[in-house]
Each structure stands twice: as C-alpha cells, then as structure tokens.
Image 1 (cartoon, rainbow, N blue to C red):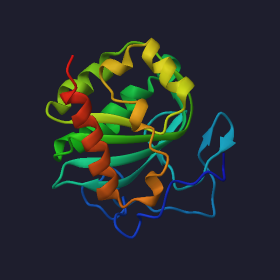
Image 2: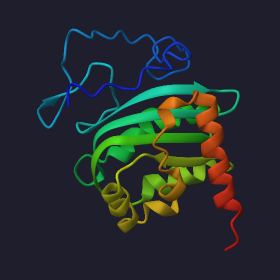
Image 3: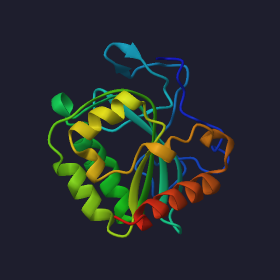
Length: 191
C-alpha cells in the first residue's frame, strides 16, 4: 500500500495545505518518512488522517465559488468497527459544508472494503447538502454492493455511468461538470 499515492496532477491548480479554508491548511508533508498505517501496512505520506484507523483521504480539488470538492480515498471504509463515516462527516464534511461546499465527489478506487453499520450519518449528510449531491466514482463493485445492502444508495449516488475510469485525464472542472450532468440526468429520470 505504501506505493499508492494520491493523485497529484492537479496539484498545480489546488494544494490542500496552501488553502486557508481547507481542514489541512498548513500541513507539512514529509515524503521521506512513512508513519501512517492501515492494518500495519504503511501508506504514502501524502494521504491525510481524518480520525480513522482504516480510512485516509486526499482533497484533490475544492472550488468554493461553484461549491464542489473532489476527494480521493484509500483503505477500508469500516463503519462497523471504526465508524469511519462519523470521522469523515464530523472532521471533513461538516467543515467543508460551512464554507459553501454542496457537491461532493468521492473517488474510491483505493477503497478495498466496506463494512456497514447504521445509516444515520449518511442520512444527515444527505439532508445537509439540500440542493447538492454526493457522488461515488470508481468504487469497486463489491464495495458498492455492500453499501447497497446497508441502504447507503438512498443517500449517495453511485454505480452505472458514475464508474468513470478516465477521470485522471480531465481537468477538475471538466470532471465535476461531467459528474454534475450525470447526477442531474438521474434526478430528472421519471420515477
């Protein structure tokens, strides 16, 4: 796991440690020292701790005027043992929502497993975004299937055309526009 780095091609457009509104403003990254682990496996120093032993993130891009953020994740999303959704919601999402973020793109190619519990924090997050949305992109099918078993799909958008494999080839604004259009099509789809 130590060789899985957060996506860094957008770093020239957005640096989480230089963003005064970011929850990681001022953080100094030492790429020579590996200290964080998930289940005893070291992870790249570029990943950010959110309070969970098993789930780390990287805010790849935030646009406060348009109200969206793109977050990459690594590890095991474990609500059953570590209440990871609580850590994500309280330590990151709540902070971002206070500063006008209403659209969340979570990239989960490096989320290796999901263990669900109740859906209270998902429901709260869903209600908090009101006219926004939460989209999961690139999560593995078995992770999404497990989320569906816990009714997480009632609150988060995922699967189908949101499995966007080529997101790395896009600029963050183009990627967001694509996801937004896909979500709007889903919402407009007749019941």
